[in-house]
Length: 220
Image 1: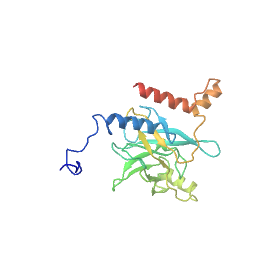
Image 2: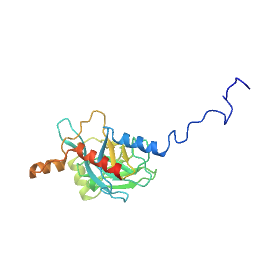
Image 3: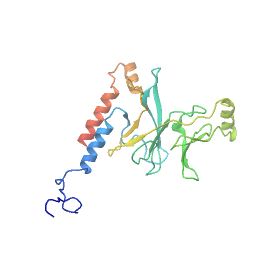
Image 4: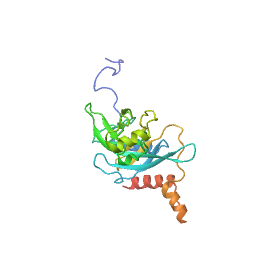
């Protein structure tokens, strides 16, 4: 066997030193670096979104071309649900801030599981329903009951629209991040910043909030 090397002989090849390779510590460091990338935006600290399935929270992330902050609704799904576009399991979804059919806040929506296993969100006003996984319309302005009937009449000229959705991630510390579409401008002033301006207090920028959260995570 002299001169033939160790190729194809199990156990004889050179092994990497102990501690090298993709271990839990390196995976955690890579996740922390990934969370800090600009396309992932911190939108909720641990505990701000309820733990019960169906819990909702309105958050701001990204700015419209007209300079208005986008409002999104975080929704807690069943444990182990996979949010759209995420490369790891998370039970948090991010969808529109208001209903595409009647503009009612989706923080007042309810969630359910369809017969085929699809997680759905239903507007609390007009009853329109979408798939949380793909944003597809399941039911559009059904008009059941007096409130939904009125909503259907007021919005009868609107064409069906899929619901918006953002990929989400939840860090080991329980913080929720969303990934904004490419080219979306970052927020320069949150609602809290604007309120601080009106009150004459010094505003805290979004970048400072994110940096503070990252420092807090490192020390946790």
